[in-house]
Image (tube, rainbow, N blue to C red; front, side, top):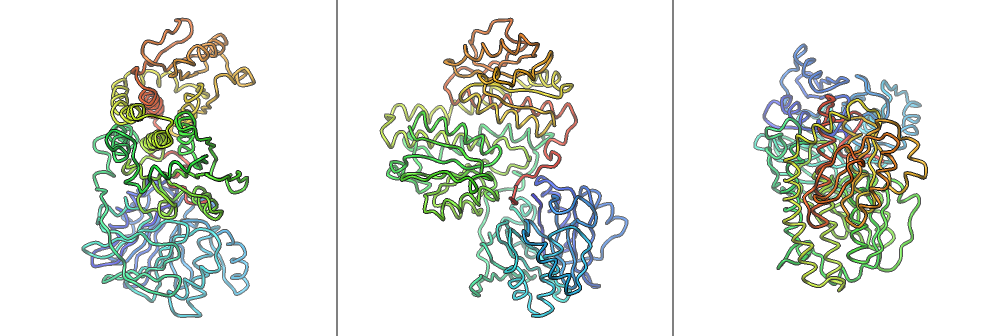
Length: 609
């Protein structure tokens, strides 16, 4: 959600801004702009629309060469997409870009207007620029002005700031929104995530909450809230520029679906020792698992759907009562905590604002926390008591695939670890679960990827429909929720998931002749029950596709199409079904000509509440 890039050094900054912004496109945006320091001051060029619109403006009116600049992709919150509302924003001697939301911007704007400030945009960001400028006019010191201004702000922010009279300097501060600094051969960079920095360097420094940094062509200095200063400490990322490229696939989403077998292996293998589930490399001992008497999973979107699968597996294997909570609701309707409660937060980006707020809520009440995250050294990863990384690698498509896949695989491994530690599983049973996740699951995914022709044929039958339904029971219902989300978020076809047994309690009224219904039936114990529900919708004219194990007896009159999954363990069959629904969504969106990697109105990393 929004993206920031910045540079100061010895090279021309404008091409770097355009390159960094193009990498940040995946985060979702509706306007774009850059501010560049030149001999005449700070020049701002911004516009509504995609980066190619900005590039056309720069071709028509080229900027003088600049060695210090900031850039931004905006996802509209305060004020609609427009040239005026696009970042960067200028106020006096201050030009800035901003990720996040200033919650008390109206109050701040009212105070500034009393002193004669006039605002041109509808954004909270212009208010932030004006407040920093007012403090700078009084204090004359950038660090003091930024600190004084941000002390008055409520909300989340990551700022990249240029001062007209401070050539070559980029000032930054973060609170609640991520910012990463980086060191290259030709200068220093800042960005909202590591992928934007990979074209330039692999050396990075993740900023702490409340830190101010000053980047110059020669050095980077960090200033903490207590007034102490220190140079940046650089680390080297294992990510590569190639990992953030399409690699010959037409879309990142398709590439990432194909990366799932390797992503699962990478996420499960580090938690296996002698064939048994073992989280000691994550600093989690069997003794800790024995203290867990109940689990609260907190997440948003697909991560919450992963939690629904995880909850069923945790209860079945580990016997740990598990509830799943939508992160945006967690603090406002807090659940009861009891002795032995573990709060598990799940976030692909590690910066999801609502999930982070839920984590802090649990910690404030002394409840142990564990984070399942993909992005290393992000805020959630740092603040949780314990963290488990999913090792999915960069996920560029807005709609998650391998992120969700690895979250489920880690939760399943965790369930086996708790069950084994607490004596609910013997060694042979625990080894069987781990082997299924580590070996069978990747093979099952690969087998389903070979069925692309069938998925394309199914997709052809969906493109003329406005409504689609997924139904299932047990784990299949949990998977149906993710399947429905995938289809609607990238194809824009309305799609809902229902527990199959609930159809007769109202939902069946929506079924009319030709309505596409997908029935997930991977659990042999529930196939007959699900098949009865299929007959209910089939008799009312639904066009039914059943997704089930090979060898499942399905009466010919019950379905129009069957997607057979390789028969095997429960994890293998479930992940095979996941691959099927992902590919059906992808093929449908491709046939409709949708912007698959960047669906309208969506953002990859949701860093505002």
